[in-house]
Image 1 (cartoon, one colour):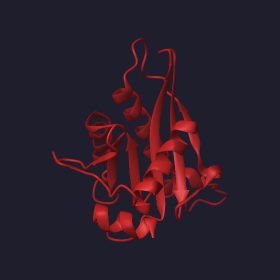
Image 2 (cartoon, rainbow, N blue to C red; image 1 turned 45 degrees about the vertical axis):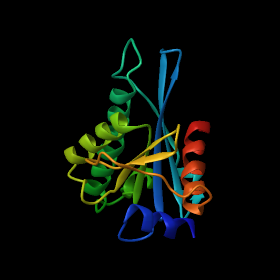
Image 3 (cartoon, rainbow, N blue to C red; image 1 turned 135 degrees about the horizontal axis):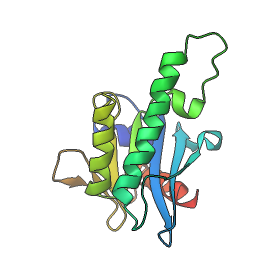
Image 4 (cartoon, rainbow, N blue to C red; image 1 turned 135 degrees about the vertical axis):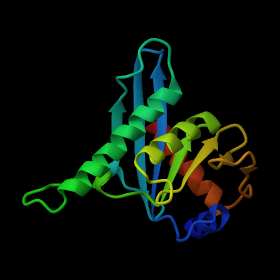
Length: 171
C-alpha cells in the first residue's frame, strides 16, 4: 500500500521498489560521514547500506558539498559497474550496480539541488526520480518546482518515507 501511495503521490511510472536515501552527519564539524540506506519493496536491505567518509569538505561543515561528493562517488561506482558488467570474473557490488527507482535526499532544496546536479552530470535525470525531505513539516520537495508536497498525515506512504529517513539517521 505504501509503495502504491508513493507512486501516485510522486507521479512515478511504477512503484518504487528500490528506494535509496542519503543523509550527511557531522561530528562537531570534524568527521563528516555520508550514509546511504536502501529499501527494497518497502523493507530495509541492510547488506546494501554504505557509509562514505567525506574527504573533499575541510573546515566548516558544508552539507551541500558533502552530499555532492557522496552522490558523485555512488554514481561513479554505478557507471563503473555498467562498464565492467560483461567482463569475465567481474564481481559487482549490488549496492552500486543498480539504479534506484527513487532517491530521497534528507534535507531541503539546497541538498536536493546538489543531488540534481550530480544526476545531470551522469545523465540520469530522466532515469532516476529524486525528492528532498525536509524534517520540520515532513515536506517533500521536487527538482525545479517551488511548491512542495505534504503527504496525508496518517498515510502509509508518509510512514514509509519517515521510516526510510529515520533509518538513514540511525545508520
